Length: 106
Image: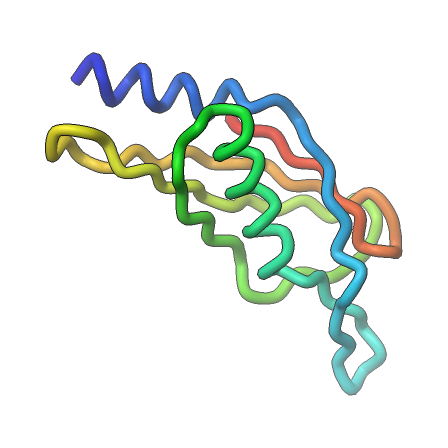
């Protein structure tokens, strides 16, 4: 149990980071959607770089690329010694119309 809590603390300690999602998609209505795969990869890389932990991040499939839009992604890290995986939410905020985002573990 202590190891799982320590792992959760390590993930949530990832400071806020930023990423760009320069390749986005637009729907037939002209709405531009954020490149979610890029956001997921960026969060995974931050966890790996800052905490040396491999993770799998899942975000909502479709997010509008509009400044101020907030959404939550979940990072899952497998624990050692057959303990349950640790899931940490990340709050992601779209900062501009070009797809830049910031995120912070909660």
